[in-house]
Structure formats: C-alpha cells, structure tokens
Image (cartoon, rainbow, N blue to C red; front, side):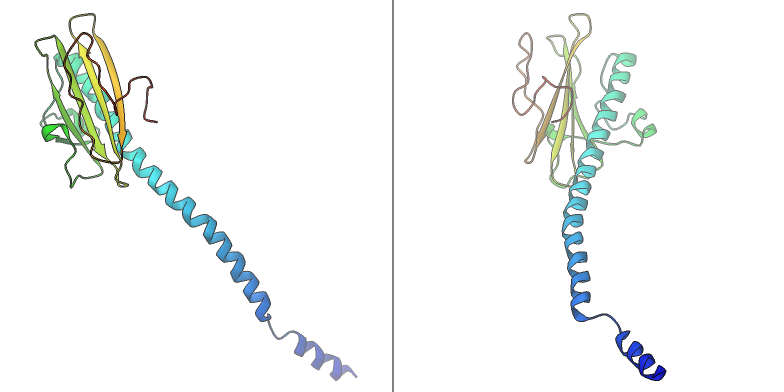
Length: 182
C-alpha cells in the first residue's frame, strides 16, 4: 500500500500545467505593456529637461557676464560656459541648425542697440526633436529693466524679430507671462 501512495505522489508532482504557464506569461505581458510606455515617456521627458536645464544655466551665466561686462557674451570664446559644462555654439540667423547636438545651447543676440536695448536669445533642441528657447531683453535706458520670454516648438524655432518700439515685445510662440516652459 505504501508503494501505491509513493507512486501516486510522484505522478502528481510532475510540473506545471500548460494553463499555469500561459497565465504567468499573460501576467508578464500585461506588466510589460504598462511599463514600456511609461519608461519611454520618462526618457523623453528627461531629454527635454536636459536641454531646458542647459539653456537655463547658460542664461544664468550670461546674466552674470552681463552684470560684470555690461554686455552679453555672444561668441563661443567665453570661458565661463565651459566651467559649467555647457556646450555653446552660435546660432547663425537666430535658428537652431538642422543637425544640432541635443546638449548644445545656441546663442544669438545684440549688445546695446541705438534704442538702448540689448537682447540675448538662447536656443536648443532636445533628443525628442522639440526646440526650446529663452529670450532676454534688457533695456539700458532705465534702471536695468529686463524681460524674459520662453518658447517651445516642435518645428523650427527662431529668435524673435523686434522692432524695438517702446517697449519691445516678442510675439508668438514667445511668451513672457510665465516663468518657465509650459
């Protein structure tokens, strides 16, 4: 009798059934279907935040340079940028080049126009293809008044053209009503 029960126990413990294995694979597939899009969105968000951070750091460095030198640094020869690890290039025509590096900030601007205003435009493109920009307008006629504009675009973004009226205002897609990209 004892050998009968031992054989029956050995037969029942032969492994998992096909249905049990299919259920496990179904659960793993459902978890992957949730995790992969979440990971991709997080990756895209990180790429956007990287160029935004680089542009914001370049703006801070430019403002410090402006207060020390009474002008913006509009060339790549400024050594203060390399101290912060910011890759800087000139934006010819005030646009981001077609084959841009996602970590590079492109600078464009003009120091003290005849109307007593200086402006600085910093542009960059993330790995997702979105382009971000900060435009800083400084009026030297009054007590160091400045206005900052932000822009986001999925197509080619260029620095705003200004008529330097009083006051000079940038137009869409540049906006100055908020203090960051939306």
